Length: 315
Image (cartoon, rainbow, N blue to C red; front, top):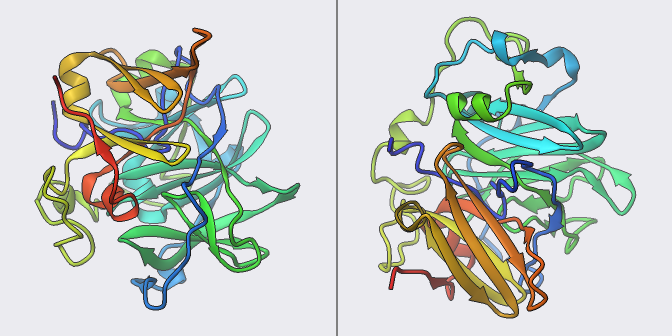
């Protein structure tokens, strides 16, 4: 499998489920409110260099007019009976797309350094926000800013970390990263975010193509390294209450189905060969299993936020 495709979801990418990606929404749990320490935020860019895209129907084209190669990566989602695909190469240039899908105001966010897509509900406490990349990084991960409060939000925590909405949590919708070919076969009626409609002419540059294919981790190339796994191993991260656990993507691909337990939650973690994505279902002892959010992300980024995380390894 192509190394770039081996990515999956985060509290987010979140998971495909029952063929209805995004049919389940949940607030990503954080073990405790994040306390930002002096000097933790790194200013890596100015906001003007990474403008968000405020999308409407005019920015999308039907699948047959997408103009994508079969192996091009997309972030796909399914909300309220509507499926959409967002090309990863375009997301790498904008990092945030404010959109409305299935009647829900969402923000499709993508952190290239961490290989983490997260789709958020933009409504917080009844107020609809719009998001943008702030230019800051926290643990090499995208930090968002909103309008109108200018609160700073951690993408991987889904939590306000500085400003008026500090401590607030964003609701997360499942999404998946896969090839355009796989997504189109599963969702032939999907609409696709068009680079041309977004104002780009010709072939899009791929600013992170080299980064994805090398061992360099994070902005400085080293990242905070936890020796249990190579820094850029793609993992599916889960947080249940105060417990965190990471599942290496290659382990899921090899085993096809993993039965596990985190706290009181029973898990069924499945690799879908047709969609080239992970599906995760969870339930209590009642036996009722529902799709739950997870996070596709590089190991070095996951452990920077969750250093005490457990790691699944094949028995």
